[in-house]
View 1 (cartoon, rainbow, N blue to C red):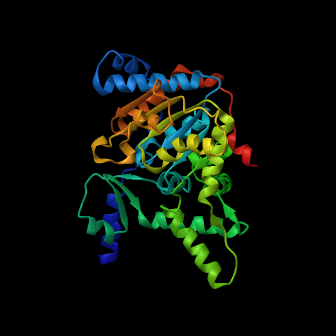
View 2 (view 1 turned 45 degrees about the vertical axis):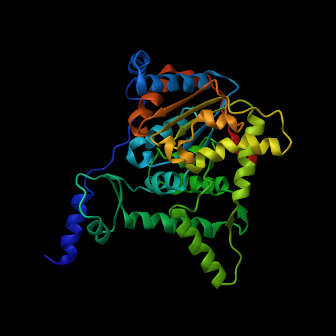
View 3 (view 1 turned 60 degrees about the vertical axis):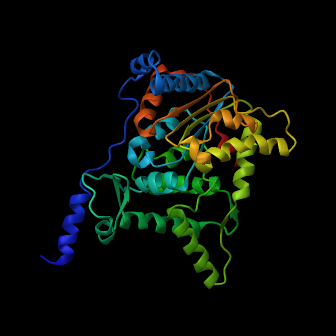
Length: 350
């Protein structure tokens, strides 16, 4: 057997067990959450956070933002996020580029994430073109298909500035026409007019495709499309101004968390002194508050900046993949979403 054949066999062995995404509609977590509410520590925190999310859904005036950082999409929560969009349980999304491009759009094109049943030497993984996220594998060759697809989308666009929301909408349109997965967050957001913002969009596979688009255009002496990060901030602030009452369901922290919270301050700077702080806020994170990182700054701390309400907030210090399915399943089965009006905030920019 040749070395190439041996490597192909080894790669197939390592990429043999697909990550199966949790289906929050298939089980009812209400009894578990109710029981946790009578416990202590993180269990009670999660029950209270779930109650706050249900309050957001029951409030007819509340626009809900789903805020995602980290790798929960790759780890099995991808379909849960998609269901929140399909059922009208979120009205806007702020996320990392990895969440939207490397994970969701990646699977939307028909690729998969795989469970690492063993973790060999990472140099070995590199030689087999396998990328690792903790105990999850991605085929690098599949990821390069994402890079090229982003390049193809950019090539079709008028050479002008685009917010990440506008470009991601083009990605959703592409998946409607060419996608291989019904449960794609990017695709469903496009279909339901739920805007997605990625304030650090090029920190993902999209960056490679967009750099190639720009370099090729420069070599040919042609104009090219560019991403406008200021437009991201302006558009998201526009939604906050028009939405009034808002709630945040935040998974992880980082740039997406700070970006959505800063819309309150930005609105004030623009002269909208009547814009309220985010009324409801939930954050699920494992970040330690002692390291000075923004990802772990508590919601109480954010109140000092005039960003969130101190009365209806809850921090949950837990690995999100282990608790988000319970929170989302509880909210799905309580059914407050069934009476919600869909905001369709993407139409604001049509």
